[in-house]
Length: 123
Image 1: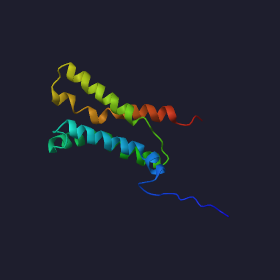
Image 2 (image 1 turned 90 degrees about the vertical axis):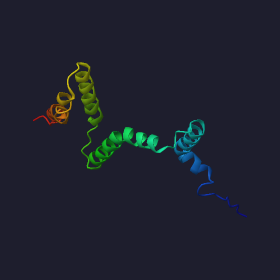
Image 3 (image 1 turned 120 degrees about the horizontal axis):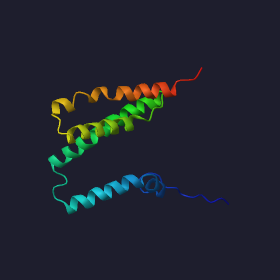
Image 4 (image 1 turned 135 degrees about the vertical axis):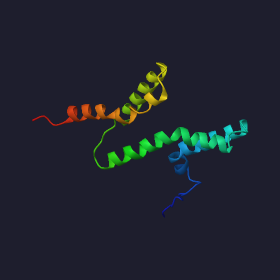
């Protein structure tokens, strides 16, 4: 005589809840915040959230492509932090915005040059 155990699959299974606990926690958090703050689901707030996360999303896509092509370079976050610190320092020195913005597209170049030189194979 054999016994068969019934295993549930899908949304009702215990395994699904264990594997997706971060998603469940996020949905619970969204529900609680939306109840406590009536302005949470407004268009302005949702656009603000999208604006704040857009830089990280763009970096994540770029880093994913780099990692998938086996050119693992995880220094992108450090270079972005350096650019932000450089901009904050220049703004704190009360420089005009016209002088603060233009150097930033070129500021990762020296960092990349140092990375290439330091990681090149030694002969």
